[in-house]
Length: 248
Length: 264
Ligand SMILES: Nc1ncnc2c1ncn2[C@@H]1O[C@H](COP(=O)(O)OP(=O)(O)OP(=O)(O)O)[C@@H](O)[C@H]1O
Ligand SMILES: [Mg+2]
Image (cartoon, rainbow over all chains, first blue to last red; front, side, top):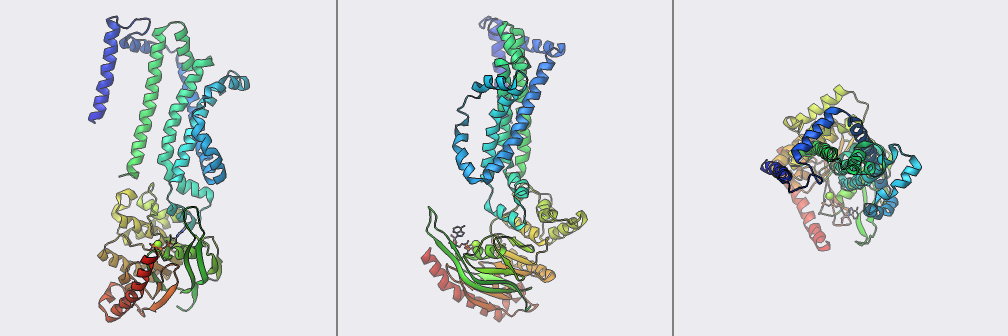
């Protein structure tokens, strides 16, 4: 637990340093406001209630992108794993996938799907999807042959084998993909909102930035950080609990 | 014990050449009848094709030539109903508790919950796993995990039980105890058992008949009848007959093992 405490102390020291630098005028108020003021403004924004629709919208879109990517990714991963020639065709594409700037397609999505939520969700989904597929494939590759033989002895068909043997075995690996999917969904959705949408936290941050409104921009950035950190911690604890049964 | 249960005729297995390896003639030709209700033990030098033979009987692996029949029906690359296998490698499911591992096969059937629970409890007791019912495989020793796999197979009450060195990870004493336990289960179930083992003692004390295999490609060199009746297991280890059997096994296998080592 000492490493955890050290981390906390480090974070606290950084915040205090920022506070001091801002208070003594080393950091310009136009560049950044002191952390204590950020928190105070954040409290005001949250209690004022005008930001809740934006927060709700962003979280809903992130959740939709993420959940869709996990479901579709696991299904596609399982199908691709069972289909050898398709796998050999796609493997190099997966490897190159994250070299593609998905945001470049954003204007195209807007032309096709309009200015609603679909383009943002689609960006988050596309960023997250391949991480889930790749990690599902990795997990399925690691299933010991003797477990496949056991499935055949139990006379399970392909679907039952996937649901009852190979996917459960692969869960810890798939989970790595899920954690990435969560991160990529946040990045995708908030990034898309920031660039070209009229709603959501990303849009509000961008709006505040364009109006030099640091009293809104910084609190919202901190809010995004806090949400991401909370979700990440939740998944981390869940993973730890799950792995405790599987590993010594 | 006069009816043929499993029949192999001219069975061979050749693994075709791959980029990494030349063609391997792993097995046969083998002609063999397993009689209904008998305890058949297979011994043979390492790599002679014992596991391949087991997989062919189970329908996991197709013979290159020849045919296998179970209860008169051909087994061809499709696992027939009524066969149970315990593999040489650990096949426990790491994401399930010991109880859920053992119940796995039964839960694929229409059997009602109470019956499943009864059978699983009974198996836990027989295998000495009651205290570990809620444990996960990672918390068990290798020998205990193998017992979980054995229990998972036995609770399904297969008519043919194929065992690939299930006690490989156990010490001599525990091996003998498990051997006695296996004999009791076999008698109660009336199943036909084929057990693969490296231990000549185990072969000598458990079997009705012992099939001794040659070095690769494995053929049946000789089939030894033990002529044990009810009286067998660790109790017969001190008898002269047991000494004769293991001496004969040793004699047959010494040359073959040398040949296997030279060929490897
Ligand atoms: N899938 C496979 N592809 C290619 N060769 C194989 C395959 N399975 C087995 N072999 C080869 O067939 C031969 C017999 O293997 P098998 O596992 O049946 O031997 P075994 O008698 O069970 O050995 P052990 O006593 O060490 O368990 C070995 O030479 C092995 O390398
Ligand atoms: Mg083997």
